[in-house]
Amino acid sequence: MSEKLILAIDQGTTGTTVLVVDGAGGIRGRGYAAVQQYYPQPGWVEHDALQIWLTVRDAATQALRAAGSPSLAGLGITNQRETTILWDRRTGQPVGPAIVWQCRRTGARCDALRAASMAPFFQERTGLVLDAYFSGTKVEWLLEHMPGARERAEAGELCFGTVDSWLVWQLTGGRVHATDVTNASRTLLLNVHSGEWDDELLRALNVPREVLPQVVPSSGALGETAGDLGVIPAGVPIAGVAGDQQAALFGQACFGPGSAKTTYGTGCFLLLNTGTEAVDSRRQLLTTIAWRLGTSEPLTYALEGSVFVGGAAVQWLRDELGLISTAEETEQLAQSVQDTAGVYLVPAFTGLGAPYWDQGARGAFLGLTRGATRAHLARAALEGIAHQVTDVVEAMEADAGTALVAMRVDGGAAANDFLMQFQADILDRPVRRPRNLETTAFGAAALAGLATGVWSSLGEVGATLAIERTFEPQMMPATRERLRTGWKDAVTRVRSD
Image (cartoon, rainbow, N blue to C red; front, side, top):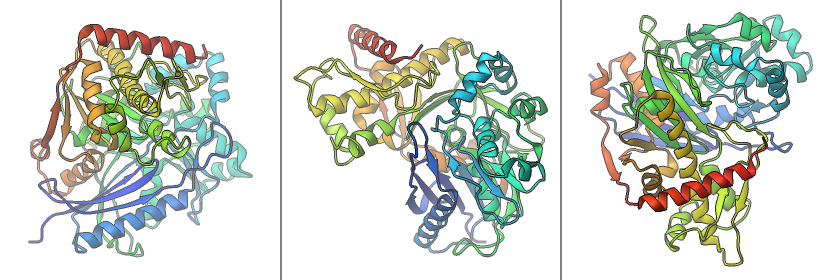
């Protein structure tokens, strides 16, 4: 019998990673392709949906060739979640740009809905705050601004989906239009309690049912790959789908209530498993669906705090300011100085996420003096990431009524030892980093592998997780308090309200 392997597609904001994963959690092949972002106006962020698909094919080709073109037991997908795509049901051609989760073009629409006292309604039904971050107002914008789109949508000629739906459509040759419950729960259109599309939400955002994908569990076969996908073989079951942060929670084996992880990517995302209870947040966190492991299984929920700009702050130092040549330089620069010399970077480039949800806030360096160097600025950028995560943890502990024992971490920036040590210090909790930082892709592989027999239980999945290093807190309490007070003052200065 041939070895059971899973092809895991991790389609992210800045690139697509594809892994070939074995039953021990090992990586047999890896591929990567960058995704171009477009900024047509201040606050607007777009992708080309066709290019997203081409990066998947490119990265999959690399991974499968590196693995020796193996036979596959299944395929899993994880993706940037709220990014919104509208396409022609017959031709598969996109209708307009892919509007990225970071895009703020629908901020005024969200303001109008809040002014109409709609925010409590949306939060109760969806578990989300009423913000341009989510997909509902993005698809409404496409329907209003792409010529003829609304009429064609109501006639059933167009498909709406987040990136998972777009990839499933492409992989199945247009035979399956579906999304899993985790991605659907990020649209402002799904009732988080029932796990189904909600007609009242659809009416509030003027989105016709005819464009919506079918909602399916996160684990379970929903279709097979078509026969014209290059090196991706035909007939492979697409058996696992989850939004990137839920996939990372699963890949970190956070299977029980009270377990939590933070992913340090373009943004930072902290999720706390709350089991089968959808905990209502009183501090502007999100109640989201973590996964559903089959049609007969209950929904598992999480509390989530989303930081809009995490690793993107380091990319800004590199690409826009030219202060560094590579992201890795920030670690050495940060360690070359004892502190930030009083400098704080609040990277509110697209507003502030949880727990503030201030879309009018804008980023700033604060506390600059003539003695500030690029090392101080680099350190301030890294410390700003950790401060934002700590803001979310404080709100999350208050909402959940429990203290975190430790934080599990993943994502590209989790490889930065300085950032992880400072995170442990400012959070005053151990930070545990796994050997495999690509837990988002592994989570997609695990969801697909459970459905296809690569793993038979959650325990088998968890047994593949190995901790590479634990960062213990070392900071004196007085220093921590001083730094946190300075950070909160800096945030107050950039807020718009």
